[in-house]
Length: 330
Image 1 (tube, rainbow, N blue to C red):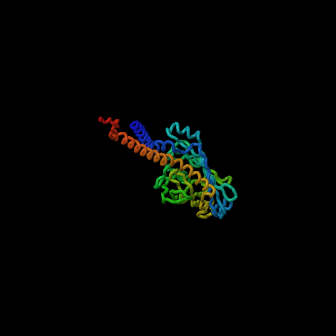
Image 2 (image 1 turned 90 degrees about the vertical axis):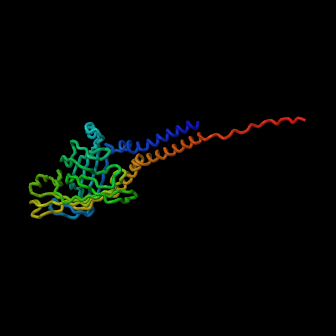
Image 3 (image 1 turned 120 degrees about the vertical axis):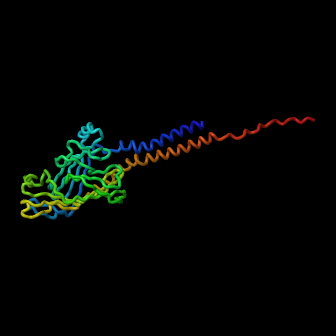
């Protein structure tokens, strides 16, 4: 019986040991993915910002500019692309909506972002766009890959429609989470006017006819939880200018918007709580279960060896039989 039990334990030990790398390197890359129907929103604020008054064409200080960003998954579009792409795809319809202190629109930039659900690499398909203009993205946007590495990544900038490195600047602590800090500086670049302008009757074409151009620069910062690849906090030091042309009344340039844009506190708390729960799920497949099965396999293997050793131990000498005393003859 000991020999049979030892063989059963040995088989279980081999199974658990083999299951450990399968969970980490086979199951995890296939199971960890962004859901196609995800929806999320984010509110950011720039306190004491500078904003252009289009009525006077003069820059003025305002108490606050609010940026509302939404991401909504298009399941039907993702399924249609998957049939030709041959992989799991996510289609995000994004909208960055900027409003002044009076609630009036400053700008609205829609995007369609198509990417691999597992790796977050861009998938090029019909509909990939920024503000209605077709684009071909390189690198990531909005989210880093699962198990983010300590290195630079290519990050897509929607204003310039180009990608550039976003640099890893070290590991930090953010609200009790270990995060990787990334930073990208976009130098002054001429960019397109939004298709929807904040003043009725003014269009990008009519502004272009005056010879006035729009320029933009930003310092983009992200604090990224590396297990999930999700930013728990982000901010930008953002500046936009209008330059040249008759629209400015002879001036070389005027500030259209300048401010330090930061996530609102209630959204920071919500994001940190969400990332903590998702982090546990990812660690279950990448660390907790693989290590647990590996330790269990080692324990079962040791038990099987112990049973085998006891089964092979030679038996001791048999005890001598007791005999009845013989009668003594006279």
